[in-house]
Structures are given as structure tokens and as C-alpha cells.
Image (cartoon, rainbow, N blue to C red; front, side, top):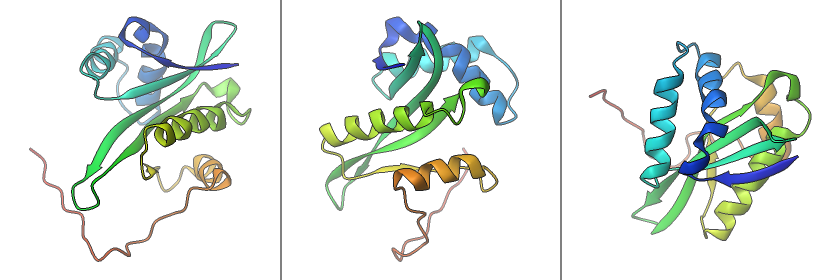
Length: 149
């Protein structure tokens, strides 16, 4: 298995996986939309994508988005997407992708890597906790607010 960071010229490797990832989260299949989204992120340097390859076939990917803290004056990374094809789950692919993402963040002098997962995604939770991610409870004294636009 090979883990590599892809650029816009290699987006075809990850587009089908990204479409499957979205379907996993109950979104309609739309390969054209998936391609445009990935292409825009890579073209504008808005995300970093690592893909897992086995015999030239893409079997998983992870996508990170930068986040900044003005108060702490730091750059961090949000591991927003992680997907491994069904037949390769629980075989170390997800772990290898996260390890590559963490090494990238460390080399980029980030303070932390953060992620979210569904409350009922127990398989992913076990993986994240085995790697060393800690579930964060509200302890900072800050509330998060959101409004749809």
C-alpha cells in the first residue's frame, strides 16, 4: 500500500471515493459535483488530500482543511473526511491515512489535528481513540454558534 498526497492533476484518483463517502452520509450520488468540489479545493489550495493506493487502485482517502487561531497565533488542521472502501476497512488503511495526515500537520508546524465523527460511528471512534485522539468535552468556556446562510 502506498499513501500519497495528490494534486489537482490526480483528482481522478479520489473523485469516486469522495462520491462514495458522500453517499455513506446519505447524500445523492453525483460524480460531477464530487469532481468539481475536489477540483476547486485543490486548485485553490484549500485542502490537502492523501490517497491510499494498492496496485494502482485508490482504496481510501483523507482530506484536511486548514484552521487558524488568531488568539493562539497557530495553524491547525481539520481532518474532515476519511473514507476507506468497504472491503479494505479494518485492515490498517484508515490508520495509515491518518498517520500521513498527522505527519503532514507536524511538518507544517500545526498545533493539533481535529476531527468529528457521527455519534453512532463506533468503528471510526475506536480507530481514532486507538491512535490517541481524545474526545473533547466543552471545557474552554466558549460556546460554538452557527447560522445557515
